View 1 (tube, rainbow, N blue to C red):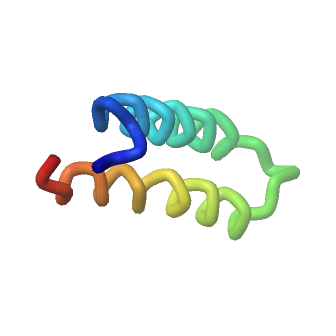
View 2 (cartoon, rainbow, N blue to C red):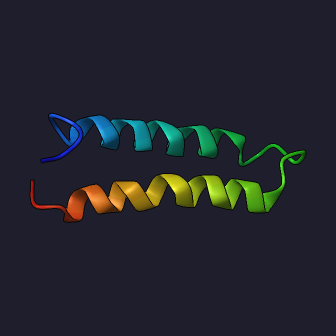
Length: 54
């Protein structure tokens, strides 16, 4: 059984995280590796939610 009643909840959280990273891309004070890590940590669960069969 999934932890969530619907996979839309984790998808929405991941999309919100991606939007947050996109907002910080123009900020020169934030390290680019931190931006890349933030993007990857939000994209990978989003892609995983599309692969699952539930």
